[in-house]
Length: 382
Image (cartoon, rainbow, N blue to C red; front, side, top):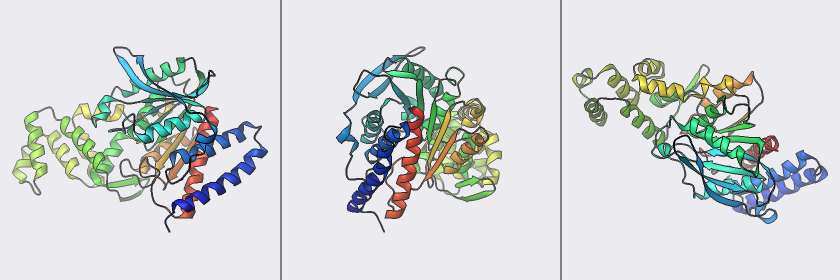
């Protein structure tokens, strides 16, 4: 049974009544106030809900396009903040490869909803990632942006966190471990990121996701395949060989003699793009050009988790076709011994969008999971 708009409305009001009965009893407690903020936040970001009650009770945030100084250039970002003179908790949001533009309704509505909940929101993009490529400079860019956000007069510098989406989630995790800000990052919210870039390459090349000793078929999204293919081809320094590999990929069964003339790096690039069994992927990755191998290592949160000091909250779509959810499971495993971790897998989301069709019971369950996750985010920020 798929959930209808009318059923969603009834469910919303049922949730409102149940949660308000509880929170009104504890409205004088910080936990109760956070619960009310979270309850009002959820309908703003889940389009199935027919009404957005947060807008009834809380004023529209202030929106500013800002520029901030960097080492050798100027950064650009958007600020959304509560319309008062107080100092608030804050979050730096960073989006992934080929992200939604800054005026995308999903970006605006999320930022406004967080600002109405009492947070200053700074949204950031990378021009390199808009071109569907990983950005080796992004972690440093994020550190500078975080320091700038903490310095704003309407931000409480002791209550500032970071949040990222898809590849952006992995990069904010790396930035949060940077010694320049590691002691100052209050929380990291990672949504749909990867843990180890080489493991992500293995999953894409084998069309399988893997966790511990189990494997299962996984079919990467077209965007994932496009970014993967582009990086591999660009790693070949010889333009002639790059053209050769591109030509071979266009052929259903290329002649073996044409494959034999490729360099070891060219053969590795061709094999990984064409697809190889999971058990062979590490051998192919080891033959990739050194520059690409170094980039994969530098942009892997697995290299930095021991330096993380912030509270980490992880979200992932269980059936994500852009980054397999097993990547977030491995991030959670790496942080479990340290503690200070909150992990949630969802079936509500299609990658980043809470739009997967669900039955009424499943929708209620998933909505509560989202409520509880966001309650933890807002509670930590408060």
